[in-house]
Image 1 (cartoon, helix red, strand yellow):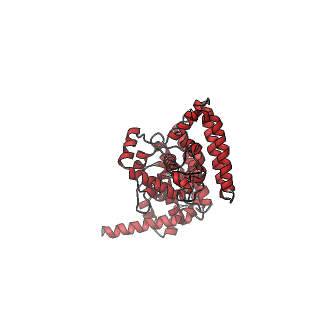
Image 2: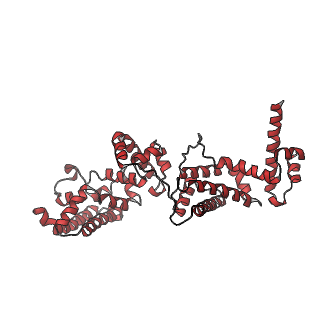
Image 3: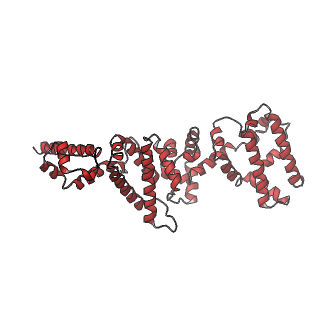
Length: 386
């Protein structure tokens, strides 16, 4: 008997919700009456009040029903998310799109302001709980003000997204939001010795992460790749990733080291006998490496490559050798680094231009080598002879 009553109660409640939602698409919330609702739901007044004490209570329950799942951090089979802020926000975007048939009409209805206000209040609460714990604080800005700014910005992005008929992928929407707000997350510090030990103990994990990043770079730019995507592609958890790398850029720099592990350094190139074929000495010149179209090509072609590469060579042992020779020749550290960057950036620009793929490339390369070698000969030739 009680089971039949429960079923009847659930049916009545669902009918009231459906009636309320349909009426909100037709008129404003303020103009709605309980009589309108019970007439549309085809239930008695006593049945309505058995479930909801007032029209306001019905609205509160409806909003809770809509946004409870949208803002839920629970993991699901369809898309699993961790408790990291960027993944939770992505979770919200996925659910907003999943419930578009229900939400889109309400967000465009005469009563749309109510639902945007509720969404803002709940997102505001989320950010207030996250600042200082998962999201970095902003110096000189009260946490409540910063939380409200982040929540308001998020809701405005969502509004725009709905106006665009949710045509953008949730990842693209999240990237746009993170770029506009310059949101920075709290990264739990991993001691260098722990990270080093992890790299030694689990080298296959490092290779898996680098392989996953290489795969992702074939379809998107580095600055559009999220930690979540990379961890999923590499089959590792976020904590495992952070045990090995501080961020995606650090993993990208490790890839660059792999790409140029078999490339002649500046000193190697200066001392290289051009009569010896590159395949005989076992190394290729820098300008040839960046022209080769192999599995590493997406790494070199990414817009972030130049800055990352210059940062890498500034800390490489082969660079230290060149810098040391330039220093002995009388150049300051700044001058020596400028010479190295000038040589590398010049080669990079030429090799990635149309000249790099032209039939005259061999002559162009010889001219570059001669020009660079002459410059280094004047700068450090005497030191090398000594």
